[in-house]
Length: 100
Image (cartoon, rainbow, N blue to C red; front, side, top):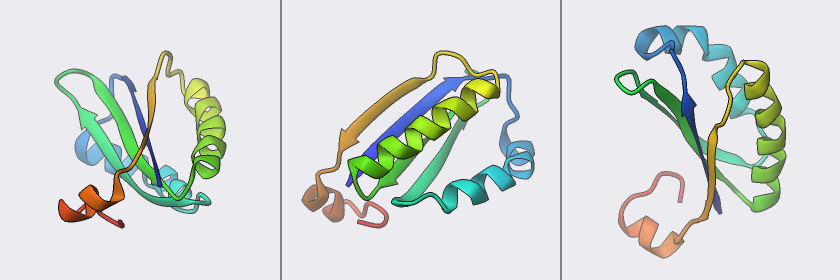
C-alpha cells in the first residue's frame, strides 16, 4: 500500500460550502482505480486544503497523480506540496488505520 499526501494554498471554499461544491469531484475520485480511501483536509485559518490518499500500489498512485496534477493546475492551484509514503501495515493495523 502507498500513501499520497497533497496540500496547497487556497482561498476556499471550506466546510459545508466545500462539501456542496466538490461532491462531483469526490464521486469521481472514489472511482479511481486502486484507490482504497481519501481523507479530505482543510484549514480555513491558514488557507490550506488537500487530501491524504491510500492506494493499493505505487502504479495506481502515480497514474492518479499524473491526472490530478493536470486537474489542479487547470483549477489555478500552483505549487502543491506532494509527498508519497509506504505504509507500515502491521503497526497501522494496531492503531486502527482505515482499510488496512
